[in-house]
Image 1: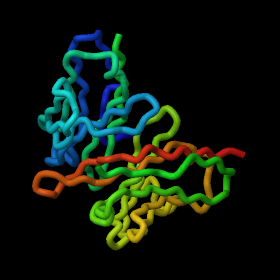
Image 2: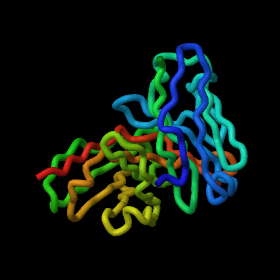
Image 3: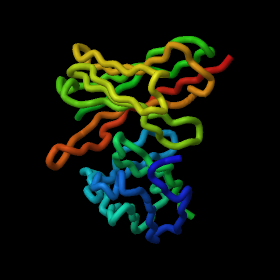
Image 4: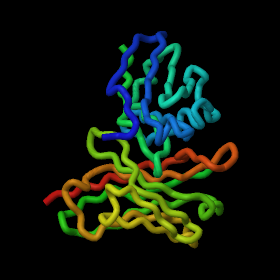
Length: 108
Length: 123
């Protein structure tokens, strides 16, 4: 049972916008700890997509954005592309680092 | 650009011991904590624990405490994850990742990640 809850799957057509939620509690996200998002393409290692709730590392397209409100965080992807099909994980801190269960994004 | 290069895939039998490694490039390796993450087949990411290469201080997830040992040798910029007695349930991909601090320096993200080491435990 992950401390952070994500929907197991989301889907969208090319060009559409999708949002992935990450729901925590008062001991992690709600306590003020930042949320990071990682993208894991099939057969590869995860890479950071969003850090500090809403910051994009250099090289990450601005189609990806992050936000945080209360005990939840959100990853939004606009202008969906086929290469966005991957697993997405949120991560925060709750006396130790914790991950969400992951969300599989399918591009229809 | 910092890179973490992990050791190759391993196939072991239950009860055997194993140590896998994660080598960092550049001379800044000792200045950053290293974390280990498990990904069981078809499953999500699980945080195992972390090590400070400067003094080898470690912190473990309660789920893994007592079953694995994390260590580091700063002289060769390498972190390790080891088992003394493997179980079939240890079959997974294991990733190392560096703690990269940002902002005021009190919080960190995992960046970069190693390429992963596949460990297969089967009789």
